[in-house]
Length: 234
Image (cartoon, rainbow, N blue to C red; front, side, top):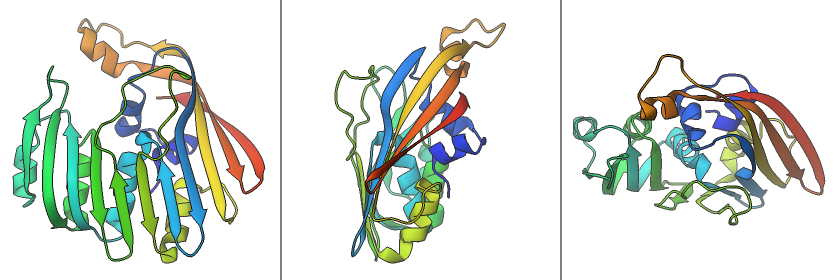
């Protein structure tokens, strides 16, 4: 399992990653995709909202657990939910932007959680397993420019057994040597919008337009810092 930032740096951008950037126009966006790991007697991982799906994907690899919360989807996924024996009710968000699927507390396995992820825009789920607890807030922040307000770097919080450390590190901090504390934060520099030719529908243009520029990854590793850059086209 690789987080969306790792996929960008490795050049494997997909539709899920593209959807992360639809909210951005031209400009510099600082303090994005913040994630911090503390390694003591257990692992404490916290991050901003961008990582919600990655956190859920990660703990599904641990084997699933007791799940509750909200899945936001662009399409009506009530049939998928019922076909996979998941207890939930669906409602359309005001304005018709996406569906809000409310999950009752229940035990779900890896495959059921993966089905939710495959069909979601954001999975805002609390999951408790034998050796971990994941908590995610239930309302994603509205788009805003850098500096308007402090990024909530505790939107996603995971506590897990040390046995998962190598798996977590490879997913989120693949480019760092072993250490006790790591913080990563990112700046998106978008200097060009690649608009689809021939499309007349404004909403489709918004959704299909690609963003081009670069991403800057700033790492704080114990008491030292590193900065890395990657060209961005998503």
